[in-house]
Length: 380
Image (cartoon, rainbow, N blue to C red; front, side):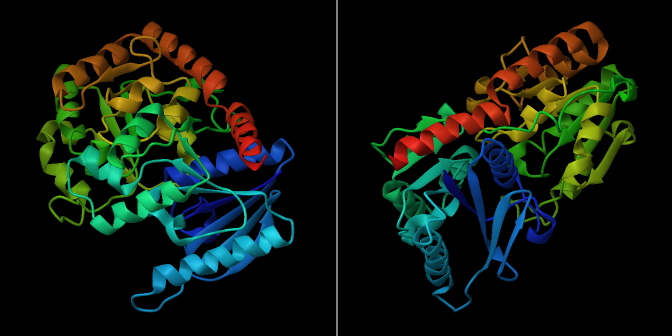
């Protein structure tokens, strides 16, 4: 079977920065190629056009067409031509695209199109409780209505999206995956005591502005605690401030801030070293579809304290392989962190259970097989 992924991002040195969508596509592509399928990754928004093959994956970098008022439509037609050429040459059976801004709204390829929900702009605006651009919502709805089949990485995201767009279509649920070989805890000796790790973009929707208030509460009871923050800084969509990190700093108590280290962005290949060194990982987020970062930490057998919103129960079983807490309940969130910092046996118990769940539900082998079976059913 021959599958193409259309995406605005991908974690490759030639393709700029990438987030969760790109990482999830990379993991799925690995799983599909290992299973003997042919994979194409079509990345639009690139600085130049380029075609190359690497690690059995065929890459098409697509430069957007620039023409005032017509750039998006002309880029969509350019993408359509690339896809249809592959179909004509019998190199492609099916295309998968994300729901973000509805890129396939004006693309009509000569093969089935699957949309996988990783969280549309409409979805995230709803979770953030802010207005969505009317044009974005229109495009996203049109792309979903035009699709031959619909996937979602979580049931929660599917249910919310279905309601927001008044869709009658059903979604098949197939979660994000990770490569377990890249995320295994083989060296527990480098773990540092009392180290709390947050990794992810510094942005309001991921709870970055709650993090200082939570850590202040932790530090009051455990002045040995250290907070490590990893992730690129971002602007704040509510205030217009160009740096969320600059907004976070004054929220820390003066003494607590002395125990905070912000490392900025780090290469994706090195993130596992930081996870491995952490005692506890924290994710006080408000808006996700199905966070790959949580699964990576679980695979590394880390005890986690995370948000209890929506999708969270599809990843973590509260009190079994992590703790789930409302992100604005700063004291309650802090108490769960303190409990794990002080209880090594409970950390190990949560970590072992977390790894087991990832092996059963989120490994690339499991998710690639589910996806391949789904694609075959649509093609047939």
